[in-house]
Length: 465
Image (cartoon, rainbow, N blue to C red; front, side, top):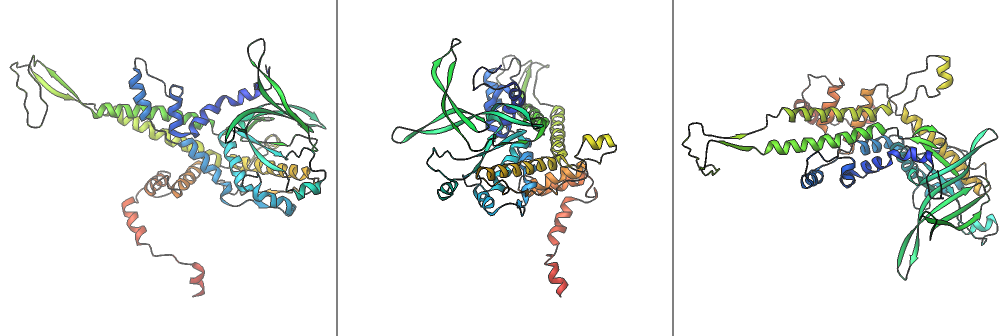
C-alpha cells in the first residue's frame, strides 16, 4: 500500500524486481564485485579472506551489456528519417531534442537501449516554466522557450493512475522521482531529491521535510505547484516486452540470469585453476628428515617405505568446467540472437486476429513501437506550441531481421568483430561451426589466401574500362 508520495506502487515493485541485477551487469566487473554475495555466494566453510580474494579476482564476461549494445546498434546504424509532415520547426528542435546537445537519433538510441536492457522507460515532453513572464506564444518564441524531451528512466517511475476516457486507457496521474541541483554557499551545490506528480493540466513537486509522522517516517510536503496549457499528461511510455499498460519486462531478462550463472561458474573455474597450478608436496615415512626442495638438493631417508612426491590435479574437472563455460557462452549468444529471428507467418484466422506481428522479429517489434512512441512525443511537442498538425512521423531503420537462429547469432558475432571485441579467427571458427564455412577449410591456410587477395577496386571503374 502506498502511504506517501515517494512510495512505489505494486505494479512498479513487480517490474523493479530485476532492476538491481541489470544495473550490476551493465556496471561491469566493478559493479558485480561491489554486489559481492548477492551474485557470488560465499561457499560453506569458506573463510572471509579467501572469499575476498576470490571476488577481487573475478572478472565479468559482459554478454548482457554487449548484446544490448549490439542490438541497439542495429536500428540506429542508419539515421532517422523525417516524413514530409514533420514541420521545419519540429525538425529544428530535433537537432537538440533534450536541450542537452543530443539530436533525436542519439536520444532515440539511448531510449532503445534502456527498453532492451531494463525493459522500458519513457519520454516526458516538458516545457519550461515561465512563471507568467511570457504572456504570448510570440513572446515564448522570441525568448527561445520551446518544448523538449526528457528521458525518464524506468527506475525513476514511482506509480501512476489511469482511466478509460472515450474508450482509451489514459494517464490521469504520474509520479516519478528526480534529483535537482541547487546552489550551496558561494561555490558549492547540493543535490535534492524530489517527487514530481503530473495531472492533466497541472503539476506538483513534493520534497521530504524534517518532520516525522507517528511511525517515525519523514513527512513529504508540497514544495511547488502550477498549471499547464496542455490538458493531458505529456508522457509517452516505451516498451521492451510489454506485459500491460505502463508495464513491461526486459526481453533479455533470461540472458541476464545466464550471465550471472557464467559469473559464478567462471569464478569456480578460476579457483580450481589456481589450486591445480600449485601442486602439493606429499611425504611419507620421512620421520625427522629435513626437506629442502630444489634442483640441486636431495632428501635422504632410512625407511624403505619412505616416499616424497608432488600431488597434482588430474585436470578432468578443469576441462569439464571449461566446456561448461563455452556452452554457456554459446547459449547466451543464442538467447540474444533470438531477438533478430523473424517469426513465421500466422497459420490460422485466430492467430491473425490475436497476433499482428507475423513476419517480424522481436527487435523489429520493439523498434516499431519506439517509432510510434517518438511520433506521439513529437506530436505532444507540437501541441505545446499550439500546432497539433506539425508533429508528423519519423522512420527508424528496421531491415535487419534474419530467417534462422544460426544466422542471427552470426550477425551478433560479426558486429562484435567489427568493433574489435571478437577476433577474426574466433569469428571464422563460429561461422565454420554453424555450417556457413566448410569444415575442410583450415584457418591458417585461409589467412594466407586472404593476404593473397588482390584489391577488388571499384566495380564501376571496371565497367567503364
